[in-house]
Length: 185
Ligand SMILES: CC(C)(C)[C@H](NC(=O)Nc1cc(F)cc(F)c1)C(=O)N(CC(=O)NO)CC1CCCC1
Ligand SMILES: [Zn+2]
Image (cartoon, rainbow, N blue to C red; front, side, top):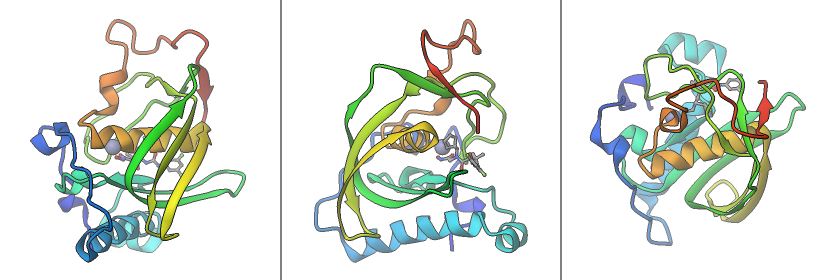
């Protein structure tokens, strides 16, 4: 089972690497790892298990965060309207995105960052992404906006060695990008 101690923290070089594409079909080992990442998110959102193992409630995890420099991400997010986003993707790729930006008004954090970094993180407001989903055993094509779009972009950044605070405006962290859509979560 993945514990917090298995999650590498900022400063570890793997978080600044570009993760490797996985040759398809994925190996049983890669599938096992990605399932374990998804299970970590489930455990971290379970009141008992998160308490027992002291897990931060995670909604997304990228393989480099467990020191595996491969292009795999797990997402587990339930929206207020009850819509669930449960995806375990191999070689995810953003194939198009809006010009418009959006950002979380509360800012972002990261399972690999043990400190608060205040400021707005501008991201694409809408994205279309594709990837091989091991939950559905097929390639999926997702059109996302709002909080789900933010989570997927945060995880995709980890595959390219980008941390959320790389996007924060240094001169004025709380300067909203022109015409950007604020998202309150
Ligand atoms: C860093 C942490 C605070 C644990 C963050 N959790 C989170 O945002 N939980 C959450 C979000 C909701 F919208 C509603 C709710 F009930 C709980 C998270 O998992 N990540 C994932 C991560 O670090 N991946 O590498 C950071 C988020 C910041 C924006 C997107 C993902
Ligand atoms: Zn993160």
